[in-house]
Amino acid sequence: MTVIIVAPLARIAEMAVRHGAREMISLMAKEQAFHRPAVIQAHRHLLLHMNDIAFKGTGNLVAPDETHAREIIGFAREWDRAAPLLIHCWMGVSRSPAAALITALSVSPEQEDAALVRRLRTASPFATPNARLIQIGDDLLGRGGRLVDAVRTIGRGADADGNAPFTLALDEPTLERFESIPVIPRGG
Image (cartoon, rainbow, N blue to C red; front, top):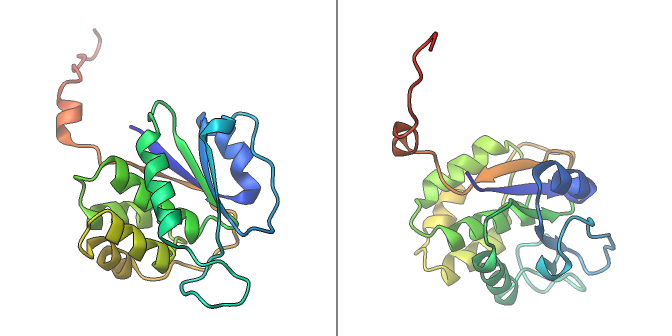
């Protein structure tokens, strides 16, 4: 099963190596410097400069906008899914979970928004996806408000210390996937 790894900045190298990620989306404020882990292919690293805010007009802060969401969607659709995709922001709680949901729906649009968001909450009790990025992604992906509504149903996540990476499966395992596995009798 292909997964998206969501991590805080402090854990990206560890998570990339542990999970074998070769591609990464970074959602960071412009002034935040960091090093791309060596295992991440330079040409498959998308760096988007934005702050974790939900509205425009806040001084020098950059709100997520349509250009950011379009770049996430485009990058996601080029992801070959041979290895997990790493998505991170400063704490791994708001921007990166929002980008993970947008990514999942970009590559697997047939899935139910509510089921995807429930998987997110199960994977992370701390995730509070950035509302602005979710709204823009919902619009661009033609979700008709379903993604926004689903995210509202899980509410704000628990307080986090920025040290809780998690994985989000692209889809739920189905019975059909396991029916084809042969049963080996005991003792044989």
